[in-house]
Image 1 (cartoon, rainbow, N blue to C red):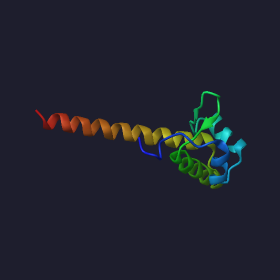
Image 2 (cartoon, one colour):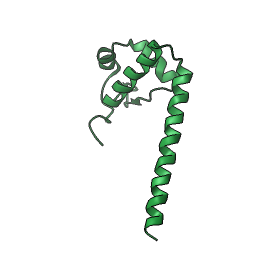
Image 3 (tube, rainbow, N blue to C red):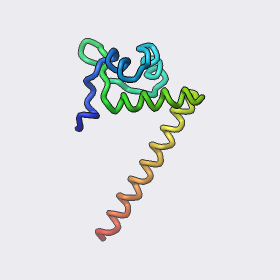
Length: 97
């Protein structure tokens, strides 16, 4: 796991890094756009990848997108990635025959 994927940053630091309020960050979590981990004490923990994701979300919101549109776009991207991976696996498997 790279350092960018490790969920170790508190919501306060995320707020400072992104310029978003803690309330905005929690809202994006409620809307299933970001998925922080929780510490044993229940504190949200984020990664550097989450910082980039939140900035991207904020830019899209600023450009007029709705949260459901962002979620829909992400689902579409995930489906495309899955199909590409399946195709790569199929191609690799067929090459070994």
